[in-house]
Image (cartoon, rainbow, N blue to C red; front, top):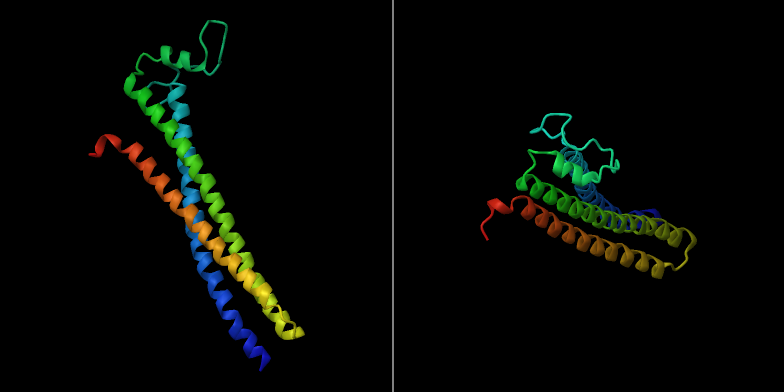
Length: 184
């Protein structure tokens, strides 16, 4: 009869682990998207800065040599050497740099959210052996079980807060990217 009691007691932590696992999957997918978008923007920014963008012939602009003793360095060479670069292109580069900063911040926030979810999974997982030892050894470990459950729930709450912050930042990045098309 004790084994049936043990199985019944394990249903809650297992269901909690399952739900947290789905949330963890969602958050890791969001993290992957921020990483991919950051890499895409960095590559585009590098192409634009070196003059190898799609609207400019290869070989024009900055050679990436830095300060060659000619009086100009990196970005100055890029801006002066690219006759085709105008205010719109510079504005786009500033937008991309701002978006990269937002994406990096989002990645750090998502990392914290994932860490909180992992703590929740670990806490929930530890409830099962605690229940096992309570039944097997007939020791009162309810306080430990309660504490692990509270840690698990608080970790989900912290992760959810980080997730909400990420959603706000993603909307900020979207607003930055689509600003000229939005009516305020």
